[in-house]
Length: 183
Length: 181
Image (tube, rainbow over all chains, first blue to last red; front, side, top):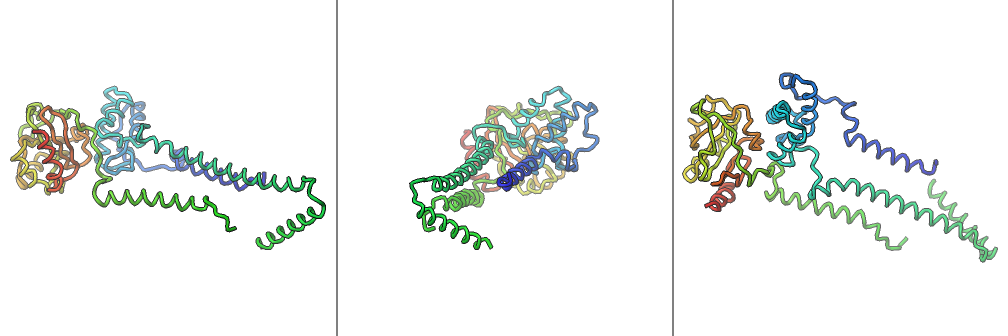
């Protein structure tokens, strides 16, 4: 168990940074200032919460990496109003998103849709995780091979006792050298 | 120790690969082929949105693009508060000799628009008032000025976000207009 401690720490570190990076924690822990003003809000709380949810998925096109929910830009305000007008008119969430997508393109969605030309973007993280696992497994297997090669020598009966004594002497010498190196 | 290890070169090769990709992206940005703030328009080839807008000169009358069908049109979103719109005014004036230009005043007051046209010239055959920016959203406008070229069937053939510079007119707009004839 203690032998694997460094690996475990690294894995936990990756897990924590993944959770933070993916924004799973942010809504609860970090409160952001909202650009939404009171007069924009809809009276119906169910519709309003759908409007907020949609606004978080839509990019403000003039500030590029903010959602229209976060942005104070005029265009973001107009788009928030457009979302609410369509909600009041009885449109579904999917219909509103696809309507804005038809006017402004995929770019208006903060999460790019899974399509042929965005495949690399979506699959790259999975690829990197698999690559990391492959490298880790490869390194472990090599360590195991060196270990078992050592064991094979000690179990081999065809080695004479004189040779065995020489092997042991060399091993001790090697260990002493290692100790001196680490000091 | 002196054994040749190919894996030793993996970081170097990975770095060179990234450096080449980054260098190519930078090169194309610097040479002007790729402008990250310029979004591709998805409306090209589609029918121009027909949002009814009140006219500048007459509140009761509406601007209908359908009235102009059968001729190519240039639709220009502008505003009196927009500095690049002033810069492109002379270019529009010149273009108005070759093509009918429809102006849409985006989020502007009537009095300000009128004053702007008196000062910088009026190249427009008709002017619609998009006071709350709703028509802008229908057209996918994200900032003025934006200009759309509409073909004789009422479809959007070309779009440019930003002022019409001499370069944009000669290398893009005029060839597109010639293609339509």
